[in-house]
Amino acid sequence: MNEGSGALVSWILVPLFGAVGLYLIWYSRRRKKMLEAFAKTHHLRIRPGYEKTVQKTLDSCFSIKDEGLVRSFAQISSVVVGESIWLFRAVELLDLDPYAQSYSTHFPRIIALFDISTDHEEYFVLDKSMQACQRLPGSQTPNPNVTEIAKRIAASCKVRHPLSMTLVRGHGLIYLEPLVTGGETMSDINSLYCIARNMSEKLSGDV
Image (cartoon, rainbow, N blue to C red; front, side):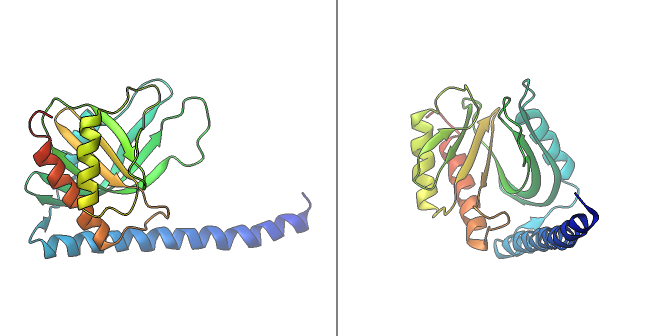
């Protein structure tokens, strides 16, 4: 590449990366404000200092350390505590394909964490057509009883995006996967909380 071409690429890439950076800052602040507004509307509170407790639960219950697979969470913030449900922001490091290079592994999420019975072990996604797809390669097919409950609850809570659901070790973890990063609205946060509350109630006993 000659000097002129390199300069042209720089003129293109530098503003592009700058725009992406500004967008990431903007939607991070937007998500923070939405969670603060949600907490206020529902008479809940943002709980500073709860980040370590949430991190400990995520590390012990939801991390994946199999060879070639990665799932972990970091940058916990804006923790809203409501009954047995916690809403918060986090960045998920996720790579579930041991045979291919992933070009995007860090995903900002708004997550709901809730209590269930210890009988369940599921990891699946409900797509926009309400089809349940297992998320972990080679794992067993999701329990149809659980997925049917999830479908009914997601529909009643008016979910608009694909929904990731993990149930393990007495805890459930869910988040929405909008097509555009940072595309959640206040109604989506209400849906997430609604799903978490109802799933916790339904899965606290035998299914």
